[in-house]
Length: 390
Image (cartoon, one colour):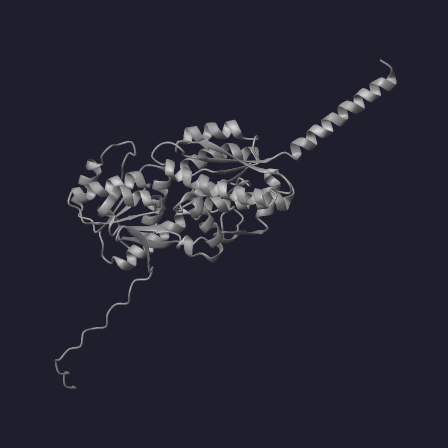
C-alpha cells in the first residue's frame, strides 16, 4: 500500500470515528426510572412512572434537550435494596441520569454505585436525610426529609395531645426507623416525656398481633407508625379489632389512596404528614390537568417524579453536558421551575424548602388540618362575690 493510500485510509478511519462520536453525543438522552413495579408497593412505582413519562413527553413535544430526544427506561427494583444495587451496577454509565429510587433503602444501596461513578441520580420520594449526607455530588432529591417530617408530627402531637401516652412503632425499614427516630427525638424534647412503647414489626409477617398486644398493654393515647401503607393499613385494622381506640399517626409512607381503600372505615380519624395539597399549587395546574386526563387520580409522588425529570433535563440543557458532575454543579447554582414551585437546592442537594402539614382522614378522604392547636378557652366566669379587701 502506498504512503498516499495509507493516509487516505487513516483519514477515512478518523472521519468514521468522528462521525460515530458525534452520533453518540447527539443520540437520545436516556433516563432510567428505578422503582418498585411489582410487589405490594407497585402502585408507588407506577405513580412515579406516570409523572416521569408525562414530563418526558412534554420535553419531547418541545424538541427534547438541545435537539436530542429523551427516552425513559423502566427498571423494577421490587422495593428490595439488593435488587436496587444490582440494577445500579447494570445501568451505571449507560444512562445520562437516574430518577429514583422510591424507597430510602433502595436509594441508599444504589447511590453507592451512581455516586462513585458520577452518574446524576435524583430521587423523587426517598426522605431519609442520610441519602444526601454522604457527600456524593451527583445525588440529589426533590422531596423533603424525615427530620422535617418527624419534627412536624411531633409538634402537632405535643400541641394537640397534651399529656398523651405515645407508643412508637416502625417496620424495620430504613425509612421507618429514621422517621420514628426523628419523631421521638422531637417529641421527647418538646414534652419532656418519654414514649410508653418503642418497637418494631416485620414487614413479611401476615399479622401483627404480638406487637399489638404489647402496645395495648401500655394503654397509649396515640400510636405513631413509621412505615408504608400495606403494613400501616393492616396494622390499623388489627388495632381496631383488638379494641384499641388510640389515634393512629403515620408519615407520608401511608399517604396514599390505597391506604384508605385497604384500611376501610377504620382509617377514619387517622393522622398523616405530607406536603400541602399539590392540586392547589398554581404552578401544578397544567400538569395536574394533563395527568388526570391521561392517568386518572394523581399519585402522592407523581408530581415529584415529574419535577425530578424536569430538574435532570434542565440541568443537562443548561450545562450543555451529560457529565453528571457538570450537571450537578449547574443544578446547585440555578433555580428550576417545576410543578411544585421554584426548586433551588442547598449544598447537599436537598430542596431548600419542603414544608410538611398534617392531614386527617375524614369521611374516607384526606383533609388538611390546621397545624396550630386552638387557643385554650378563657376561664369560666364565677358568680361568687369577690373577697373583701384586707
